[in-house]
Image 1 (cartoon, rainbow, N blue to C red):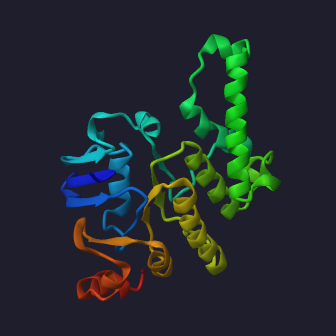
Image 2: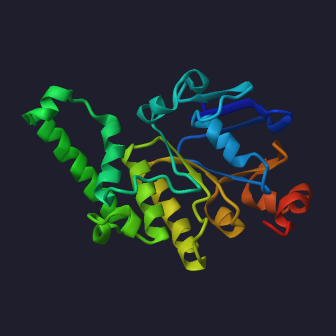
Image 3: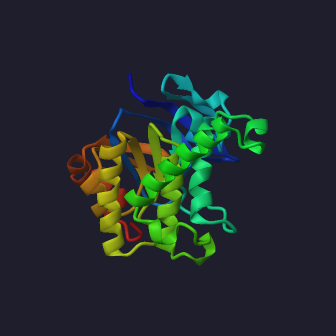
Length: 255
């Protein structure tokens, strides 16, 4: 059984069909890239999976659970994490605080034990801090651990958002344009990092991405969209050689 199964997914805003009958699946430890021109419905699909938008038709099954009946705040406990094209961090706090928020999804202590900082709360906080330290080392963030988010370069903030998502210990990680705003060298490092995340944490990854060099390097499969519909699905090589994809996306000026 697939880890994520999306079937006949559709959503309409007014008279516009933003996504129209999209189906795909993601297996354990797989990297799937979703590509397409601007307005193809890529981020809209992410917003439906992460329960920001309600589909008008279709189903989304994750680890055997139907997601359309759940709230967005229930998804992290199931093992689904996401980053955003526009970075979503708590600006007035530190790197440490932001990453710890991801850990606290797995909090098992109550208010009283935490207020009194009982042994069970201390053990839990110690485990969370050890997890943060491991992620900080993995993503090379030690220099910035106690820095405020607003003082950090853009690329570092993207790494912090990724660390917070990984702190959830996801089975599936949704990456919305991970190379957005990065230069060529930074994009190359992101590609290497995505592969390391999959190998180290055994996490399936779905990424929306415009940079085809990144897509070709890291993806197992590619789903190509246009105008809210699936044009093609296959290996990076198959998608590169697909005439419809070339016409709609790969040869487009804004791709």
